[in-house]
Length: 338
Image 1 (cartoon, helix red, strand yellow):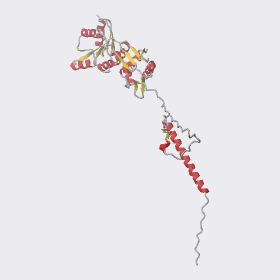
Image 2: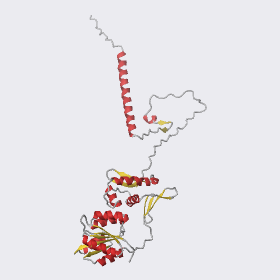
Image 3: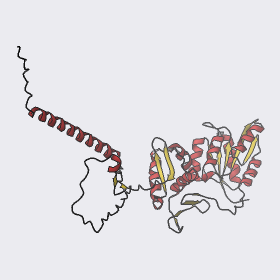
Image 4: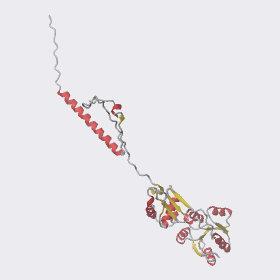
């Protein structure tokens, strides 16, 4: 007889559930029973069984739906599950169960001793692979076998272990296994809380706690909130760098020694636009405006100033014209008639 194991029996027929429970007890195990998918999810989260006997058809859903959820979640992906088929089921049902991730399948009617023997087989220890299972996203590495979270925080690649609670660890593993993908609150509840009846607000609470645990990596990774969708593990946005305006050095103008400067040269009344942009052979640098609102406000100010100057010029021109003496009418000389 092997070691004592927790065996969860998911069976809606109370008579058959009792028979299986008694046989598991006689085999030296600790059996528990659930009569629906909802109850089974709760017991899996609380008791963490070592193996599951799962009936194909249940009152609230198909047993394959529970099996698929267990295989998607990291904590239960290797949990041994034996599917108990229905009466008169064919080969197709067995194939579907095995493809969904079942470790074994038993067709009804089955012998109780056969079921006990199959439970003993799936509970045998499997040799662990020499390669450790881990996943990495940018500077974050999760070692699933050792249950460690390592962060590259030093310039030379030094790793620091991040401490976090079990729920935060499961939440982080879900993000790391699905990087850069938006995960809804319902998906997070289904994978982290095994689909238990918890409110959506609990997800926000644990996401906030996980952000605090990932504070050493705030410049590399961030958990983004996607409005109306959920959350996403993504690379942190680079810090904004203010624009740098380089000043163009103005070359010095040297005058011949024989011609000492007497007075500054007179400026021409009007120069072409191309010449006005050049100062001592170098083009002036345009003004760089980083704020669009400030640029619009500047344009409006210049427009108002131009309009005011135009109005002043018009008033001045009218005043000058009104000060001129009126032109006197010259009488037309008539020729003397002889």
